[in-house]
Length: 91
Image (cartoon, rainbow, N blue to C red; front, side, top):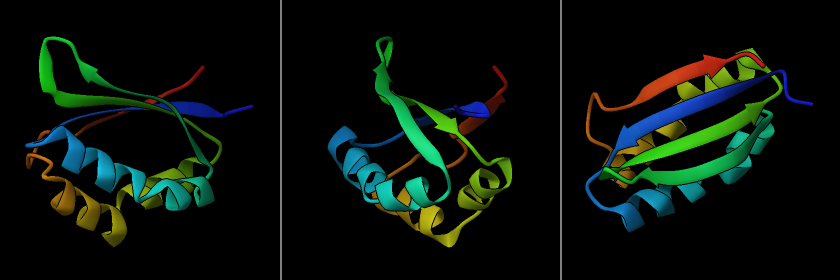
């Protein structure tokens, strides 16, 4: 069972480009103990992704969010700078 959940919201220039970059990190997230629960877009703002993860290891998840791999994926994805919001949730 997951220790906590992580909610991420971010805006992008193109959904398909964003999704390709997001999917490219599946193995890295799994290695960090992160399981994707939901990937969606905001109905009122279709250029915003809303993602929910179930996570087993707080420190591994924090390390993933500080990684060069994630920064590179954000660049490839066309994530709008300053738009990413990360919220750690405890069940």
